[in-house]
Amino acid sequence: KAGVTQTPRYLIKTRGQQVTLSCSPISGHRSVSWYQQTPGQGLQFLFEYFSETQRNKGNFPGRFSGRQFSNSRSEMNVSTLELGDSALYLCASSPSGYNEQFFGPGTRLTVL
Amino acid sequence: AQRVTQPEKLLSVFKGAPVELKCNYSYSGSPELFWYVQYSRQRLQLLLRHISRESIKGFTADLNKGETSFHLKKPFAQEEDSAMYYCALSGHNNNDMRFGAGTRLTVKP
Image (cartoon, rainbow over all chains, first blue to last red; front, side, top):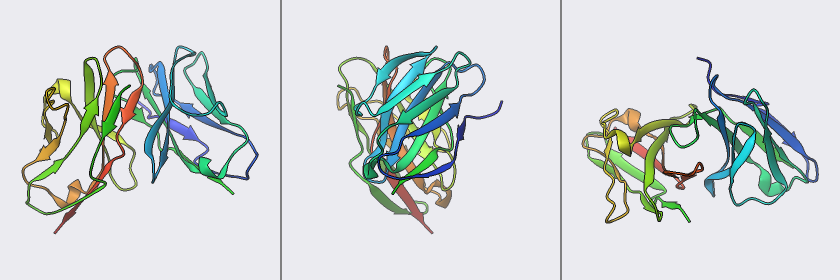
């Protein structure tokens, strides 16, 4: 089975811009979760989608949003980028959500 | 609210020494606890989960509900164990996985 893929792998944006990141889960996995990873804060949960519905949301401002398509692929969007949004954004998929998660390689976002 | 605490950001031991990575959690229901590992230049991956009660790569972890802990242990550390380790918690009936801040383990030769 192919693993979780994320595109793009690297992204450089400037403050105020918006960005869309994409995640393709493992075939058959219906749950997709997003995390922000930074050296200072570690791994922080953004949100989780299952069958195109957001089931859980972490403690992030409304600038962070996401969606899931009928084929389980997911996108997350960050609007009005701030310097502090620079991070590695990880996507993980699982069959149902509350069992083992399989992580993608991440998208490294740099905001200048 | 569910929370995972890993009190040590860095841990360094010599090869062959025992190692224990600490994890404490707070959760009002029945949690599912996991340890994830990230080796250099590799993806984050599951190491073990408490309900499996198995030993992976010589690592074990026991859920202590009284102390709300899920410490990861290995009796004899190897250099290839050097990695970033994350403790994670998922509520039995909810769907978000909360991770601790991580502990970077370095095993010196």
